[in-house]
Image 1: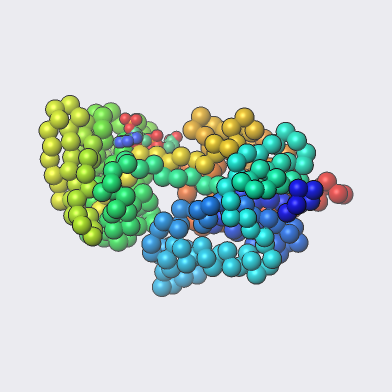
Image 2 (image 1 turned 90 degrees about the vertical axis):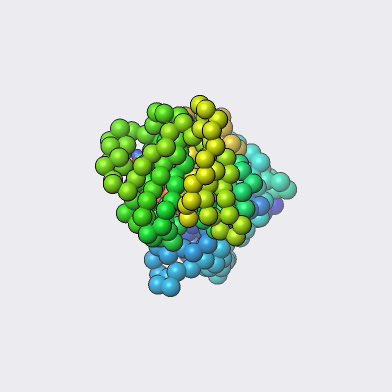
Length: 310
Ligand code: NAP
C-alpha cells in the first residue's frame, strides 16, 4: 500500500458487488485491495431483515450479511482501507486513486460504489427508517403483507414499487407531488389496472406519523395547502437514487443521471476499468444481482490482465 507499489486490482466499494469481486479476485491470486469507504458495507448496512439472499433459509440481517461477505474476503487475504476515495486519475497508467491518506496505483480498477436512495429529508422519515419507512419494496415489502402502504414518487421506480407491493399489500396509495406521472406509460397503465392501487396527486408527505413504528402520514396538498392525515403501516419512498460517482466526474463517461456507462457487461469506456452493482445498474438493484456483477467484473479484470502479459 505504499505509494510506489502498483496493485494488480483495486476495488472501490464494499457492498455485495465490491466484496464479491474481492472474494473472486483474492481466490484468483490478484491480491486485491478494497477501498471500503468510511461507511463500509453499502445499502445493506441500513437494511434489517434480508429474506431473499439465497443460502439463508431463516433470513439474515443486512449488516450480518455484509459482515460475513467481508470475513469471507478477508479469509483469502483481501486487504482493506476503510477510507473514502477523494479522487481518481484514469488518464494515467497505472491508474491513480487518492484516498484520505493513501496515494494508490493500480493496473485494473473495479468501481462498486453503489447508489444511495434519495429521501424526503423529514426528521420523522429518518427516525422511522426500518420501522415502516423503506426505500425498497422488494427488500421490505413482505413485512407489509395484507397491510396498507403508500408509495411516494411518480417515476418508474415508484410504479415498480407500487406494482410489486400491490401483489402483497391490502392497499397501495401512490402519492405524487404533481398531477403528471413521469413514469413510462406502459408501467402506469399496468399499475392503474391493479384494483388495490389508488393515486393521490398534487400532494406531498410532510410528516410520517408514529413513535416506534409507522402509523400514518400527514399529507399536504401542493395546490391548496390543505393538510390531511392517512392511516398507513408502511411508507415506501421512491423518489430516485443517486449513484455515488461524484469522484468520477470528468474521468469516464457517466449517463445523464450520473450512472457509469457500461460498454459491455462490466467493461466501461476506459480499458482496465470495470464496474459492478448499483453504480451502473439502476434497473435490478438487488444484492444478489450486484454480487453476480462483482463476480463478472473480477473475471473481466482477470482476462484483461491476462491479455496484458500474454
Ligand atoms: P425519477 O425518474 O427521477 O423519478 C423520481 C420521482 O420522484 C419523480 O416523479 C419526482 O417528481 C419524484 N420526486 C423527486 N424528488 C421528490 C421529492 N423531494 N418529493 C416528492 N417527490 C419527489 O427516478 P426513478 O423513478 O428512480 O427512475 C430513475 C431512472 O431509472 C429513470 O431513468 C427510470 O426510467 C429508470 N428506471 C427504470 C425502470 C424500468 O422498469 N424500466 C425501473 C426503475 C427505474 P417529479 O416528477 O415532479 O420530478
